[in-house]
Image (cartoon, rainbow, N blue to C red; front, side):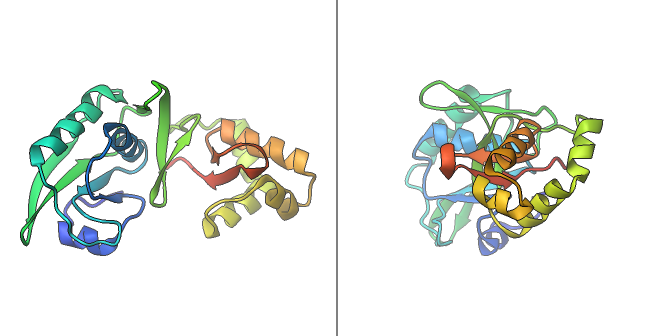
Length: 212
């Protein structure tokens, strides 16, 4: 959970992560909608506009233009309605926008992309990644509990807590089963919202996403 009491300088020092993201500028309302929705769907977060990936302060040229793009992202490109707090911060001679998003009680929120697709995004480390379903509190049933308690899934969870992702082939080697069987299990875990799938085919990667 993000601590909104942290100063902007403290957040910059922390660097990007699960609850913090930097942008030099809001170049695309669609990209910002993805970030906002992913924060709301996970643990909340702070988006700092005018900060480069290397933590340097670059500032913004036009506060009005940035706010117009932010307004479009919030008002048109995120479903359901998402409330954000936006503050203007002065760092030296530069203007920074600090955009705060609470973890939502009205999950899931969809971000609309350039093609008009409605996609659920969540945060995984410092990335906003798509998922086909969001596991919500109280949704886990007995079958899911049993699945999580199984040795293959325990091994997978332990592995993904130490590594960013795993392939179907690597998972089959990890639990000593065929790739076909490992793939079926990964797909089942994806459907239940326990892992996130990125990519397709043999190059697909799976990352951990457990409900809080």
